[in-house]
Image (cartoon, rainbow, N blue to C red; front, side):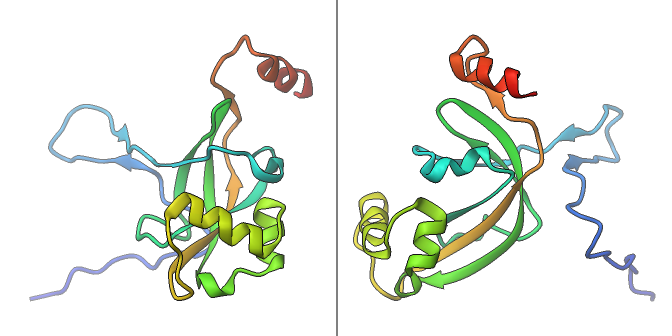
Length: 153
């Protein structure tokens, strides 16, 4: 009996294609649905930057190398997770807090509590470093934002 051999993974190749290849089907592959990361506020206007961070409650859905659909009130786009660090709430410092949300660590911790409830020092969070890989798509193509975005291109 021989074991199934797999090709080596190239760490520089980027994310794998997100398609569902079903051998028994004669229909073309269908794109997989990306996990959505929703933003209610665009802290520091970071969602308009090509690279940005977000701090979320620790969850297995957040993975280095994975692509996500980013959703905000005015627009959406696809972003790739370049890196991820799992940290404790006690690690919130001014560096992380100002970079992610433009506020002190004290205010940032209060923000996290308003979003997620009581936060203990040992509560785990994922700090994601994301890179926009798709175009920004306005929700309303007739909005002032869409017109401003079109003027920049």
